[in-house]
Structure formats: C-alpha cells, structure tokens
Length: 266
Ligand SMILES: [Fe+2]
Image (tube, rainbow, N blue to C red; front, side):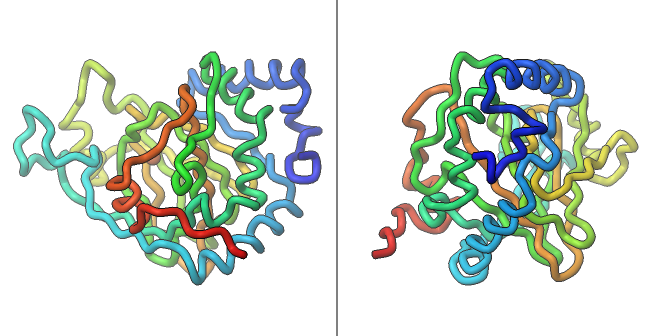
C-alpha cells in the first residue's frame, strides 16, 4: 500500500502512529463535522487510478439525473408541500459502480483493513465493515460541465470520499454547520439556505488525493456546478457497523439503472 498511499505522512499501517493520527482526526470531526487527509493518495497512484477509470467514465458510466429537495423526501410531517424548505433542485452525475472496478486502485484502498480500522477508531465504532453490495460498495461519481450535487442532508451518519480529480472551476464543496439538530429542524433557516441567503455557508478547498470523512446528517452540503472541460471525479466509500449490508434491487435500479452486477470480463 506504500506505493498508493503516503504512509510516511499518514502512518495508517502502524498501530501507534494510526492511534495518534486518529486522536487528531477525532478532534477535527467533533469541531468541524469532518476531517481531511490531504494528499493521502500519492500522485502516481492518482494517475494510475484515473487511467483505469477514464474509459469506464467515458463509455460505461450511468447517467444519473434526479430532482430532489434537501431531505430527499417530499413528505415532511408538519410542513406544507409548498414550503420553501421543500424547494426542488437537481443533481446530475455519472456513476461507475464497484462491480466495474473490482480490480482497481480505488477498490484496493477501499478494502484495505488498516484504513477501515482507522476510520472505526476515529468514529468511535467497535468495528466497521465494507458493504457487501456488488454495485454500491464503492462508487466513482463524475460531474461534468454544468453538473452538480445539490443541497441535501445525508441519510447515513458519515460519508467517506476520495477526490481523484478537481475541476478547473466550480465544483466547490460547500457546507453549513449548525443549521438544524435532532431536536430543531429549523425549516425557516433551511429555506434561507436554499434561497442563497445564508452567510454562514463555508467552502472547503479540496485537492486531488484527499480523503474526506464528513458527518452530513445535520450538516447541509452541496457541490456547486462544475465549469469547464475538466471533470470532478470522486470515489465514495460505503462502510457499515454490521457486515453483509446490501441494497435492494429497487434501490440499485434507482441509483444505477440496473439491479444485476455485470459479468466479469473473460
Ligand atoms: Fe452528501
């Protein structure tokens, strides 16, 4: 893994070094709802990973276009259907699924046990497991000129991503901490955010090769539209506290346009 990851800077392979790093990341996560390992992926590994992905992104990615609100849910109890917090926006990207990249740099990193153990330590979980879903476990999302991931709250407690390529312009990761809590949905504040009237929105500069872990359940976030020919390419890793998690066939169809894994190349 030394050839792929900068383990001199981030000693995930060494129990004492990983424990010390986990402590720093735990503090970041508590203070900012996220932590970053900038430049975790070495430049040569980025190049190799992108070379593996480019033909798939170009010829075999799933075009995903979805109109949604910030909750991914049109029925919020107590909220009128025309409330501005429920305003719809559009998310567009191109997805490559795990079954298409089983033997890739991206999946080797996703499955590397010391990384999984490190994430569990930072998040305060006894253990984490890779997802077993053949399509969903690790995805690569590509956003092209004009495409974006619009405002939303995550349904999962945390999200792990690895940025592989940043666009020339646009494609900024923006987030708003403290907008709502489990006790206070703050619908008026959500409406102001969606209307572009929230001065507390922050932008996170992310460089290629950065691993980001983000707690997005109560922290609204988006990726602004990409501008220019260079795509934003990001790997999304799914880990769970239990082994054996898979999507239903309906969920796979909704996210990927197919329910069955592709046959392995002969
Ligand atoms: Fe998200």
